[in-house]
Image (cartoon, rainbow, N blue to C red; front, side, top):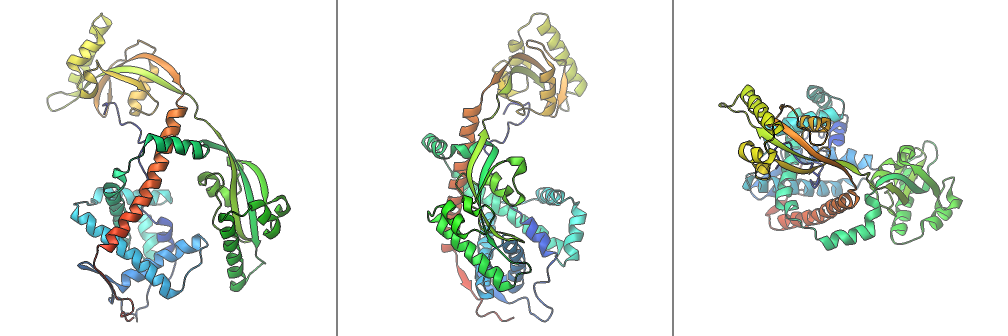
Length: 444
């Protein structure tokens, strides 16, 4: 890596670890069990470990707000328990596997994650603790759940995602079929179906409306024409126009459709979305996007002097001042870089950094580089890597559309293939484990 700062994490696959909203909602719901209920009954044996009733109840309390937030139908209690128990079993198996592989989450990583969770909700970590504990959620339990989420993510990254390969042919095929979805979205065309609810609907009316919306969605995903279904079934004002809502700039997309407009591909349809007026189905009928703008690139070279117990800041700065004077006096920059630069990644190339994109270097280096005219050499300056002098050789505007589109396509394919591989890996992990289910024997 060039020692002027990390290159952008363009191919990093992000995986959400924290069910933050659910955890905060958990703080607002009733406790998982009453004092009269024993909480230590074993509900499953997983290899040489056990899952007890209290863990299952706590996990159910996390799952319920997630289901409600999505407007999903909540299954019966016995079905819910079995599904959540399977989720716990997979979590426990992954924790066991991580331990075997020596994967751990240290306190610094965990605290950084908790700070990030709190900050995203406008809280400090202490305020997050108070919010959770006021609702009966032990902060230590929340910490360990967060640790487990980070741990399983790291495990899957090592065991699954890092082995995913994407070929050039797959990228080309993806760009041909789905390339429009990778553009920076400027406008989206929406279609809409509404299954209306009356004011103050009863539980049975809500269930009936949700069921109708789900049946309509099933027909649409089986190939039925959206416009025809909308004209026949929708209670929306644009039903006779096939539910066509027209084009919306991204900043003006209706609130109900914002998430879909940002994340769904062309032709995709949302799950039923609940609002006071009923259940909505929204289709991304078309997308208009802008190709990335050409970027300003800088061709530069530098000399780095690192500080140490033997080399002070003053020593490093003085050495670079002397080298700069020699270069200005006629000595060759590349020759001096090869002889004196501590950046082993570029020293053999005469300090040449190649063409640098905005954001490729640390901010201090970028700022000094941007100040220079072509062929100008900076005064010595300091970054986290040490002391530098930098020379700008030339600048250009570069159209990186093709490169960026290929990177986005590769990222999308890697995520897609990785998710599929992770599902298979989890099934294999489950199949190879010793699991003894004891839900039916558990008394509580």
